[in-house]
Length: 149
Image (cartoon, rainbow, N blue to C red; front, side, top):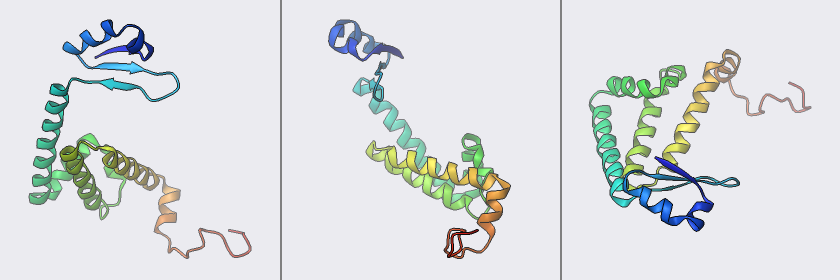
């Protein structure tokens, strides 16, 4: 990977584009998200590899849920904080988003689901919050009608 300030694309494009022969280029922006320049051949190779891995992992999950959870837990150790009965749903959802994203090239739904499940696991990791999650839900959000807890 090679990085340049975003402005270099306009001012020094003859310095930027040749770098794409050997590596991807990161254009760093001050007031917005950075931008990646990637040659199509490298992008397609990565996308195809991701699709193969996502499909393979989905097959493993169908055949052996425990093995799929174990494999994902290697990359997502926070899975251990989820209640045991929620882990299969998390694994299924993440794999479904990963497979769909690998197939379409749109990985933001996977990223959102992963952030959501990570937040859920973090909530369960806090004993006080976990205790509240296990209490019956009365629909008031913990507030009585007069606003007191």
